[in-house]
Length: 301
Image 1: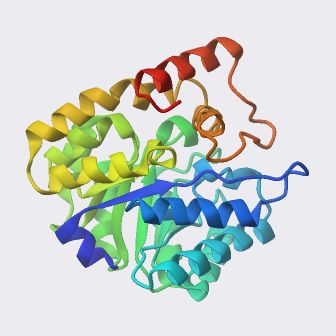
Image 2 (image 1 turned 90 degrees about the vertical axis):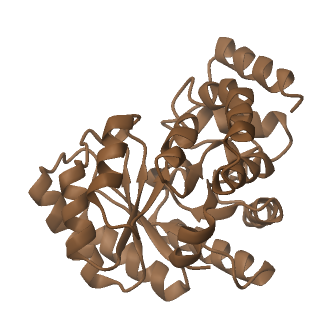
């Protein structure tokens, strides 16, 4: 599957959580099982996005996770769309990871805005342009200012979209519907705009977005795939019902820093254990109870 297919059909991609063994190494067997679970429920895998705790994995582990994802996904279906998270706050590191993912067989790259450095907008243009020049596969920009400390402005996104042919889309996680509207207005018709915030997917797709890179689909992939499909088919009444039904889940999965809540939920649902690498930890007891309450209301546990 390529981005032309996404333009036509829409897509649900899972920002996959990463399973760890007791020694906190990547659990390859469970990871492969989890990739199968996603694909069997019509969600495509994103390996090593920030939800996968990429910031606390070494480059060697990052490579390992990408290799496992591509191998397992293509084994199941050669037409699977595999997105690899290869962003970094170092342009040199982002280029190295991106080249590795392209050579490994990834279909596209997800590149988060550099965190902590807080580059200004013209510096972000230089950063993304350097990565785009180093690879040939499509790049999806990732704007999540609450985590990076820097907003990727609509004008900057437009400049990059028109300047570099392989900068092909954006994952929007700003929570700002006005900004998302500007992005859709200012970018080419074939620029793929995806939600990076589950509660905003309905609104973004109503404006012409093409799907979601979802956290919730870690635990309910079939429902998220159905949700996106109803909007691609213009069944907005059904989509509205799904939005309202799942809204409490969407919100509670961010009651603490992602991926803590979704990993805890995955543990309750026997999808995988809830181990995370420090400095992230499991949710506080009171928040665990809130997560359990929502999961019970949806008959997920």
